[in-house]
Amino acid sequence: MEKMILNGEMKDRSEIRIDIEDRGYQFGDGVYEVIRIYNGLLFAGDMHIKRLFQSAELISISIPYTQEELMEQLKRLVKTNDLQSGIIYLQYTRGVSPRSHAFPFHQVEPVYVAYTKEMPAAKGEKAAVRAVTAEDIRWLRCNIKSLNLLGNILAKEEAVKAGCEEAIQHRGDIVTEGSSSNVFIAANGAIKTHPANNLILNGITRQVVLQLCGKLEIPVQEEAFTMEELLKADEVFYTSTGVEVTGISEVDGKIIGNGQTGPLTQKLQQAFCQEIERQCGRI
Ligand code: DCS
Image (tube, rainbow, N blue to C red; front, side, top):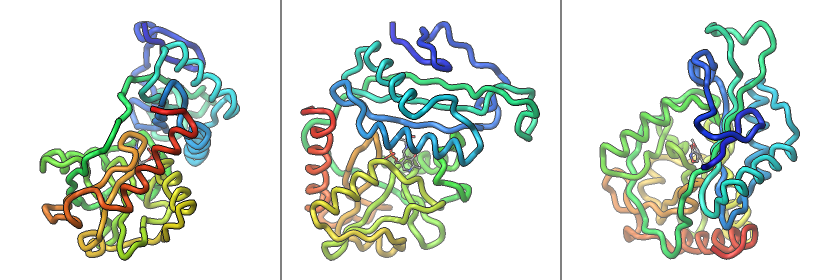
């Protein structure tokens, strides 16, 4: 039986009860992370845990562990569940308190849940996918990995309705990010992606890809780009813990490049695979 963590304790799913007045349930008042596991090891685990602490701090939730303690718990969970390939999902909510918008008057303990899910590691070449564009209707603190995902969900639904994999969001003319991913373009041998400010989530995969661009000496600009640049780009790709580095073949029906994963994207996919291998061993 797979175990989960509730507030630091390992439990069976059937033992876990979440209160109706958990502020995560009623308000989406909490933060989360999704961490990939390859060969039973956390990929970029430190970066994810650091971001979790940052997100929590930005909404004044205090996590009662050190980053090292939390990491040890997650490693133990993966080991207990004998997970080789998959993800850890974890979330922290502000806790349980009678429903009222204001923070609980009396200090309450945050509620922390973590569980694992199997997901096969993609082997071999990944096919490029189709995307649509969608107006970015989210709030102005997208740098916080908040449980509040309504804007993201509505954008993803636009993609699903169009038979596409992802929705590329834009504020007016400026491309921000995917509904659950970061978006990059390549034009004239250089790469562009939205700067890590309050308008996007600074993806861990994004950060790894930027480091890899540095190593490979691929020119990269963390600079906002327009819808026109997106549609005219030589290559478009998107990144996340789930999709890793994946090419985009078509945006709103317009073919990008030759409609297949472009050469710079391929180069980064290979480098990303090597980075997985470096951290977690061969997959
Ligand atoms: N932008 C948004 C809005 C996201 O939700 C995510 C990840 C990313 C970017 C990419 O971040 P990572 O590279 O750190 O994954 N979303 C997670 C999610 O909700 N499921 O899987 C990943």
